[in-house]
Image (tube, rainbow, N blue to C red):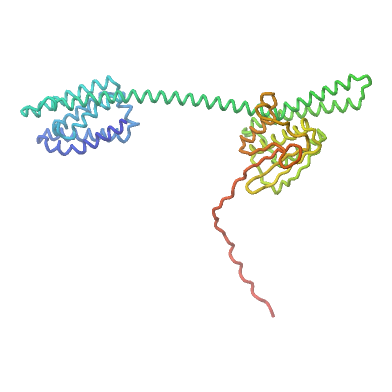
Amino acid sequence: MCRQVFGFRLAMIVVSAPAALLNAAPGLGARLVGAAVVVTFMVSYVLFRDWERFGPLLLRHPSLLAADTLFGSFLLISAGPDTTLAYVSVCTPLLAGLVYSWRGAACFASLQSLILLLVHTTLKAGLHAPVAESLLLPGLCVIAGAMGSTLRNLMLRFGAATQALTTVQARLAAAEAVSAERARLAREMHDSVAKTLYGVALAADGLATTASAPAPDPARIREQAELVSRSARRAAAESRELLTDLRRDHPDAPEPTPFWQELSSRTAEFTRRTGLHVHTAFSPPSLPPLPPALARHLLAIATEALENAHRHASATRVDVRAAVDGHLLRLTIHDDGTGLPPGTRLEKLRDSGHFGLLGMVERAAQAGIRIRIGKGTHERGTEVRLDIPLPTPDPSPRPVTRDPMPPTPKSHAP
């Protein structure tokens, strides 16, 4: 705003400078008026162009604005109060109010009003000008000073309100980030370590039951002990995977395994661990690679679907299929189990402490995937269908480069 005031002041000086120079007395008067024109013009130009650089200097030294006011009075005396230079005098208390608050506005408004009254009284002493005309410009100076002080206060309050709003927004963003991270960690723990530890507990209960039998079978005890050991190692491996995922952006973090290879290994490991046959119907070479972040969500959803088929659906077979359909990559996991209970809703599952399906839906929403859970086109069982949008190819034509034509071989026919 101060820069705009100096721009207006600069334009008024340029317009009124010829009248001031023409009305100046020859000799010393013309020199003083010329010096005043140069000084006021250069000060206005410098502050208009580099206000960020020289504005703080003006803020620290109010005497600079006072000296500029005195130089401007020479132009006002020479040009007269009826020229456009009179509007320059109104800019001074406006600047003082913007820069120095109400005290500076009162001081410079009084100084500029006194100068205007002296000039008007001196130049129009014999013209008997009305009192209203004599007090017009001084009154405008007082009004301009009050406006500058008011605008300064409004801008400071607006700045404080903006800063407070920015602080609140930053706190809300931090709270949302913490909440999202807590939800993500909850999903990761539920989809990995929590389930494996539950399996360890069940295996340990079975081991204890077998060992407390009247005639324990050593082979059965050994088998159950090995199951507990494998499950515990699996829990430790999942904990390491979770920590690795949390440090995914670390420069020493290992490169993730390609999605289709990881999915094949997980289904094979699931079959060995549970005995539930998983039939995979996809060819990794014909399927597009997936980014690591999307692959982690898909693996977690697929693993959760397999675990649900084993623990809750009493399934005997699970089919995992993947194919490209237009601009969609469709991944389906279908089991031949009992299916979802009637009236299953996410709100009821959340209230009852079952977070598996809820985590699947949250992961799909976070990754931008469309998920559908139900029977699908099958008569029984549960189908989890994931539609992953693929990037569309660039339709813009590309220049075709052609190899130079090879030289035509010469004929050696007889």
